[in-house]
Image (cartoon, rainbow, N blue to C red; front, side, top):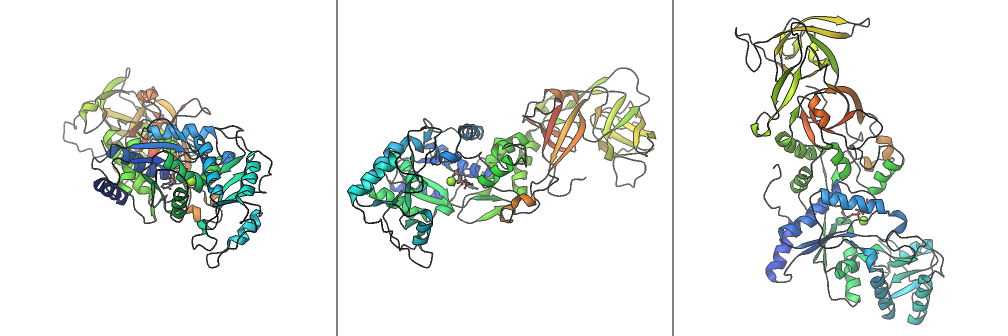
Length: 554
Ligand code: ATP
Ligand code: MG
């Protein structure tokens, strides 16, 4: 396992330890509350590992709850993908899936309770007026002229809203809190609005929908959540979270804790922006291997263990920060270096003919991992005609170049020492064939006469190798913080995908999608899981052997 065994510690776990020690709680119940309006990304993985990880380590529970109060933006496709991604990351939610929409009846009841207590009112200011009345950070807001309606009138109007007798935007329900509060969220926040939209769970039952801040705390309380963990931008909203729960009749008071969200260099994490990349066909879909989504990383060849390890390494704090892409990459590299079987593929082939080899293919047994004999061996056919990497041959070179040079020798990985005797070129001067001889005494041993052969290169049989399309990925954006650009689409890297027509060893025809191999000397690759545009084998490069953010080379 590349996953480190030690339990993480962070300020939230310290709070939980203290709550358990003091008897404030006897068990822990967390939740992961995505809005089903996009696919999950690596930032969500941080929250998933935190919430589900706590439940695992404290023998507690963690709910998966869809925070589904925006019917227009949500879709069942996202619900399904989120469930799938959470499971793939290695987590199980407790009991049934939860939906905030399951609580629409309760939420409606609590809204009535607030109205009855004189703590909520139906407002008729237009959205523009409402903004004007709200004031600014330096100026208090003004009371709406509708703020002091009677309880009866509010109940009657709220009923009309519920019954579909009010147009969208004409009325809303607001909590009556404090228009002079230094916290803008406390200036009579809207808690219900009219939306004539069909909901993916409740259909056309409702035409009023509760707002996030009202829904979230009540959903947490109804589910008996003990520690409600969210990201820092909700810090001010904690006032409203507590206010709602203090003013309704409910016997559970979860506490909200905030941590800093994950930002990664050279990518965007906002679902709105990711959605735009997909809908404008700037990538091939939510699971394009260049996307920071869980499904994209998975298709790229990341293992779930490597993502969990990444989340462990970055930790959980209250400091805003941006993580380098290389930290994510080093997690997958550590995993695959240890666990990925080796194979050979030539990405940019040039033909080699072994002139003194005749007869049929010779089947060689090659180790699947240099340090792990328990991973076994595979059969690799050695034939008269082979492919090597074009960049692995030079007509002339100095001593630093430890590959094949005209007139010199090199070892073929897992096979023999060969010597380049002569070459053939086309009219443009491109090398078409390298004619070689091989020393048939050198399988698994050095030349008998003590000749030193330093270099080792990879190869694939030209006769039985399998053509494959090989996709190399670079960062999706050209700047470290594309989200800060005026137009993030303008900083997309036009060279984020390079497609090569390569050849892979025959054993790879069986390669399972998403299961990574180390292609000797070329990096880690996995068979693509989904591409109907081509019949040929497709491999995605997960990550280079060293740092792919540096220039690809030696
Ligand atoms: P967006 O604002 O882009 O739509 P979101 O953060 O609102 O995204 P949600 O579906 O509401 O997306 O997120 C579900 C949970 O995941 C929330 O608790 C949220 O705080 C957490 N989360 C989202 N993005 C990140 C991130 N980059 N790092 C850590 N946690 C995150
Ligand atoms: Mg959200």
